[in-house]
Structure formats: structure tokens, C-alpha cells
Length: 80
Image (cartoon, rainbow, N blue to C red; front, side, top):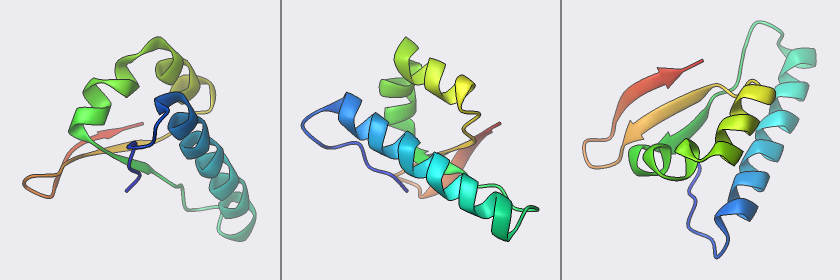
């Protein structure tokens, strides 16, 4: 699960999306039947990932998301 606790939310977002794209590229070649998901907490989904910049990146880069409730440690949503 990716945390977004750095000094810059934009830098954290850039790093997370970049890492996701890198892993997706490798998986496509090594195991084409698998797809990576970026796991984020529910609060981050409601704040950072509801901002236009994050929404654009998720759409343009076709990022698959898992939204997790940290308190209950349960998946609350799969976004594809």
C-alpha cells in the first residue's frame, strides 16, 4: 500500500504513478495475465485522488486502484 505522507502530495503522486507504470510495464512482459493495482487508503482517495491532477493521471495511465479502510484493514473499493 502506498502512503502519501511526504512534504509534497504532488511529488508523492508522481512517484506512485511512475512506480505503477514501471511495474505494469515489467508485468506485461513477464506475466501478461496479471495487472498491478495501486493500493491507497480511503482518506487519500477522498482527498488527493479526487483532485483533477490525480484523476487525469489515473485515467490517462489506466491505473487500477484498491481503496483500503486503514482502521478496519479492509478493501472498500476496487476501481478499474
